[in-house]
Image (cartoon, rainbow, N blue to C red):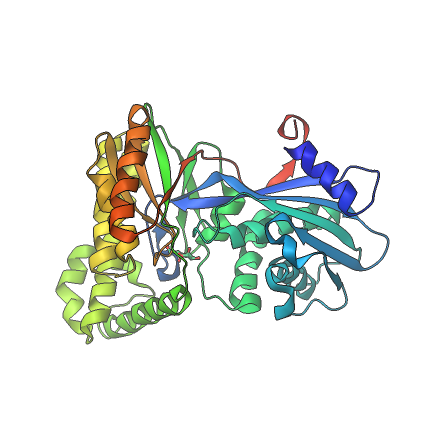
Length: 393
Ligand code: GLA
């Protein structure tokens, strides 16, 4: 596949020499949902689906972007001296944002590039395709232009692109998972200081299935920001009596003693989710390390319940899929993953049952929602990097 992409690049940009190839994955989050912006622990993993970027340096200050996923937009051309946000540049604002932020930070970016992107993350799946584009661009800029920058800084700048350049108020989890992913491992990330620890994902005779609702996500951004605001308001109320900087500092028993301080009932429900989800994430990491997949699956189910009833970010599509999945033979646990309001769910399913699983869940989904779900088996892969040697084939 990569050789074909290299050929495509050579035809597109009329060159005889092969481009360098970079890749950044998408991510799933195993547990710890809507926790990153509340300063706690999350447990994501990078997947084998992601974004390829092929690149060659130029002799001027022009950058040309082309994406196989947005062929209709053609080649988008910018000058390195003008990389401000431009809505006409649609998807290319993500890579442009990386260039712009790196320049703002004082990195020397004055050599033009030709770039071809090719992503295989399903559309609007909530599997972090935007973080994937940001991080693959960060990796290619670093390597092609010899920037002296470490991965953690690139990850943080990816979030700045999202928050300030694109204007989406997301946390650090996605860029971190995409940057620091490790094959067959989950990452326990402490979002308040970026300390992290890996645990092997040992599934034995099971697989992780990703189930896409295929729902078009429209209102998700404003609802996401609304949840953030509700958590901030709950925190302010609790701070009247507690010395805390974020909701994840509150253990469940302390929460039970102090939750009356949260004046608004809705905000109390949101905080309830955050406090208990944080406790579940800690337990889940221990269970994963101990190889106790059943206990891990139970925590996934509890997480979904909480996201449905307390955080209210699921909706009929995700609930139908998750509840159908949980009732299938050979399923250890299932939950939504990512922001919610559509996007994807994940389920740990016995390998031998996957065909039956897909058929049954899809049937229930189609009957209730009126269109089909899509199913992908998740392989857990490495983070953003240049592909060389055997990885190119
Ligand atoms: C989105 C955001 C992340 C995180 C999740 C919810 O994926 O980009 O930062 O907040 O939602 O856990």
